[in-house]
Length: 101
Image (tube, rainbow, N blue to C red; front, side):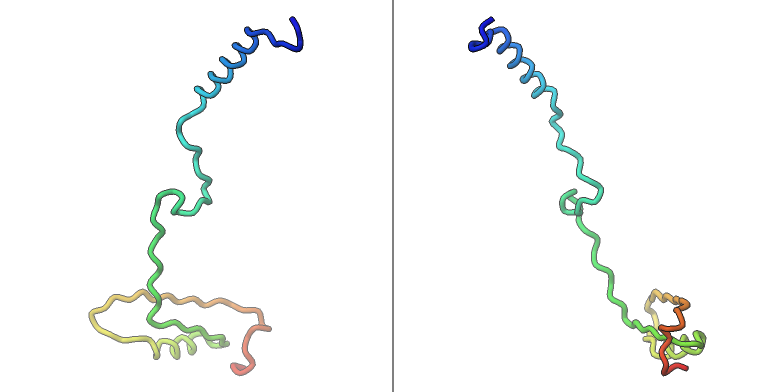
């Protein structure tokens, strides 16, 4: 075999092997990563949350008293449904306001 002119059978085998590999490749697209944005997955994003009617926060040493003050300003209407959330979290002593002491 001459190295400057490859054998035709070798070229034919190489071409057949490459065509077989191309045929064996899947036709389905590659799956998207889990962190792909919704529009890439053909999904609609969820609607934005409804803004609150009333929102307030307060730092205090007396949570029950502060809760009463906050509730006094809440909207009051009949025949309406509301979602009410209450959270009391202990803060490090450096974050408590000096006006509340």
